Image 1 (spheres, helix red, strand yellow):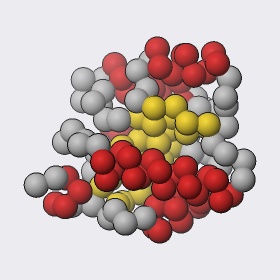
Image 2 (cartoon, rainbow, N blue to C red):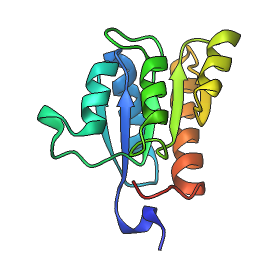
Image 3 (cartoon, rainbow, N blue to C red):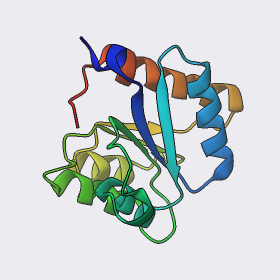
Image 4 (tube, one colour):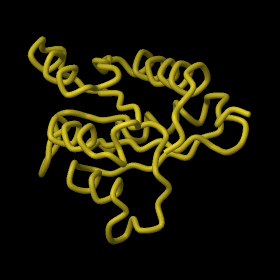
Length: 147
C-alpha cells in the first residue's frame, strides 16, 4: 500500500513570506492528495522542527520539504546542507521553491543534493499551478521513502 493511501502526506514548508505560505496552502487544499502542511518562517525554525526540538517535539517528520532560499536567520542553502548531511533527514526529498533563477543558486542547490529546483512564478495563477504540479509529481507519482 502506498504512503498516499495509508495516511496524509506530511509537508514542511520553509517560507518567510506569509502570502506565499497562504497561496501554497490554498493550492494544496485544492489538490486531490490528502496532506498536512506545516509551515515555519526561517531556517532556524526549520531545523528545530526537523529535529523535534522545543515546540516541535510532537511533530511528524515530513515526507517532503518545500524550501525557500532567501530567508532570515538561516538561509535555505544552509538548511539544505544540514538536511542532506544528517543521517536522519537526508532521505527526505527537498524541493527548492524560490524567486531566484540565478545559475549560481541552481548549481549550489544541486551541489547540496536538492531533489528539485523551481523558480516561483510571479503571477498568482502560475504560482498555484506550480504548487499543484509539485503535489502531483512528488506526492501522487513518486514513491516517497518512509521517514
